[in-house]
Length: 432
Image 1 (tube, rainbow, N blue to C red):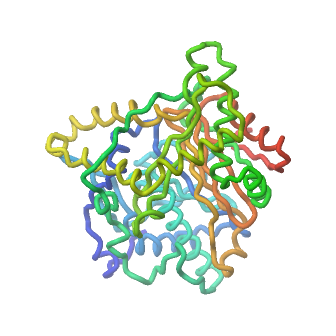
Image 2 (image 1 turned 180 degrees about the vertical axis):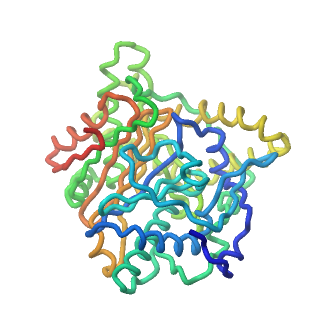
């Protein structure tokens, strides 16, 4: 299907440099480290594929930064805008796996449907979770508008597909807000869970559906936000697993969770591309055992210390400074690729035991809400075999744990701990 040629499309640049955060992903990409994430919405009725294809064409015309092919240049990778749209595929049992560009016609996102669910898998060169959610909300709003002949109010992350793309939506906000400063990115390597690796293409997903009011009430008991509470429970679960290790050295490694930070909350930006930083927070087992209350305190103070505007600016300014380095700029891509891949291996997942990304509560207009049953968010697991993503809609918090090892160590301990606190959980899995 072709996107019609009009001013909306022609105003968009045919070639787009990768944003600062995206530059690492093509070099680091591999079958064991696909750098993918998924967002999905489950509707009240089975999906009409023809209507979804029409809605997808309109959404991509409004947000052309998602309608891209990844191309190699002499110095850097770049994105090339396309006039056609990606195919809508049947959903797969193992989401967030390596993106087969040939089957996907070169596009860097994969749109699929299954029964009542619309899913979009994104390669991180395009966007982060916030930008991906804007795309999904707009796509589903357009789908509902067409199928049911109703008007969905626009705003709050739902874009008007009759409007032209805005330049601010595809800017590199890292460059806009970077300052001539920086901080060291060196940390102590974190404990990693060991297990028997699954075969390529298999990713185990366990979903816990939790009443939002229950998890909020429990977090309030600990004087914590939902994100602080869940991060602390995850750290404690991994710590319990660690203490059963036979190798003494591994029992002493720090247990840390990587918590992504949406920089749009600190800097005025409407970019739909990557604009996220992170903090690695956790405990040091050599200092002794930790109660859940102690871990929550560490998370709260760590967020106050590291997730403030000044520290976040210094962190991403270091990355921008590296990109501006004369040697790196002038080095051909065939030299950059192995260096950046090694950098990712040495600095990516090495400093955390797991990732926990929480997109928070998804807000939709009433006209749209009555057609939506559930919203989902999951991360692909990479070099680190465990990743967690959660998102809330109405009174449902969906917590997804992705793993690329056979043993379900983390999900068993994590959900057992929550259940032991009196929280009701409905569990689902993509594995039989």
